[in-house]
Length: 199
Image (cartoon, rainbow, N blue to C red):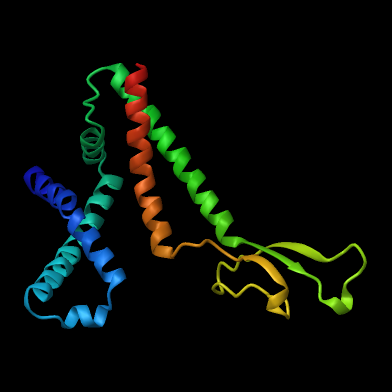
């Protein structure tokens, strides 16, 4: 089983550039036209698609195995930061890096939650209700609908009176999730390397 896991891990790492190529290519082009292409480009598109289809269940398998099997999780962490935990110093570095990664990931998630629910509008009052010395207003609110879906933020009647409007995280759901997946790895590696230098 260890040999199979090793092959799977190598595939997940080495296939990443191909998957990134597929995602960038797909976001820049028309998916229907890309899927209908023939020749070299059509074959390449199909190959990248199959690479992604194989990569997704394998990534899910590795993720679940890391959650439930401690030895496997420890092995992955050792490969990621290239520390074998041969002594107390290396165990300490791994522990501190894991704490930093956990706390920083929660901080990023809270930031994303805040940015996705807050709404800000800066606008001028209409001429008919404008009072001397009061030309405009700033409205700050929350747009939080966890069960009924995201509802559009209320807008003032005349859009021409708006100076600035912010009504949610300027990222797609997929982009936000991707950042939350990559962030723990980056923060863990950063913290471990920084601690290695200090120690």
